[in-house]
Length: 297
Image 1 (cartoon, rainbow, N blue to C red):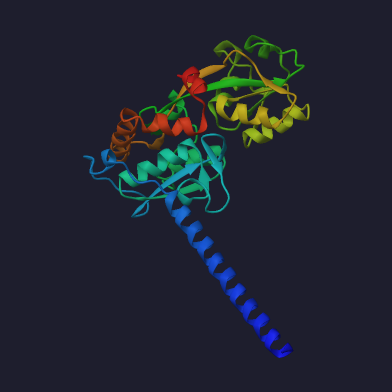
Image 2 (image 1 turned 90 degrees about the vertical axis):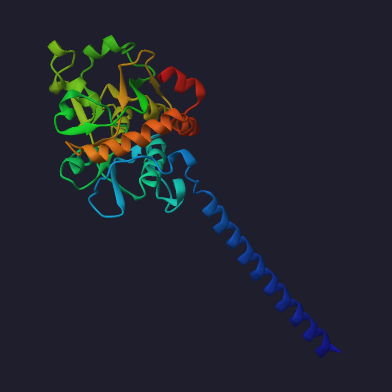
């Protein structure tokens, strides 16, 4: 009798282990299906667009240089858990994915420091740059810019008890922090005659997070940076605030190497279609509230 009971218990354990294994396989299959479901389908209006012939650096790929420390436009995600199963997510990442799909290429994202991302396009190491990139005349001399797809607002972050209460008070700051290579740095480091504060009063950091840390450490008096990441940094760091008045308003664009007209024409056709069909606004709404989006227009 004891042997029979032991045999029955052993059989129950085997069946239970089999059921657990089956359940685990079912869960894994469900996870795989969920991962596949996260990859969106290309809308019909982005299929078979009338695009010019163009070449890219690497056949079959559209290489994008960026600085993925600029929320909500580009951020590093857990491996394979970003948008469409990539390692990155954000507004620019989603837009770039649709661009690549519409022109029939695989999107490849190279994450690097912001100045390096600018140079990568000029040195033909990337096909395009999306990184909360704003147009200015100096950049236009070495790069070609697309149609603007979003509005960027540069703001000022200060400690809550700061004596800097308006943009005008920045002239009294001992040191202002910005991200290296950005228009915030260009504007702030310009001469006072041109509306800046002089290079001696501006420190450029590799990224916005480092600049904000310097502000928290008391090494600088304020940070000038785009509104999107500014909100993220302030939310994550109690004791900081954003001044009510914007520093400057700009247009976000993508950039390609100068005179790469065929690629630019193709990308512009896709971007303009995405704007007209409301896809860009839909992408932005995933990351920015309707009130914030309206205020930025």
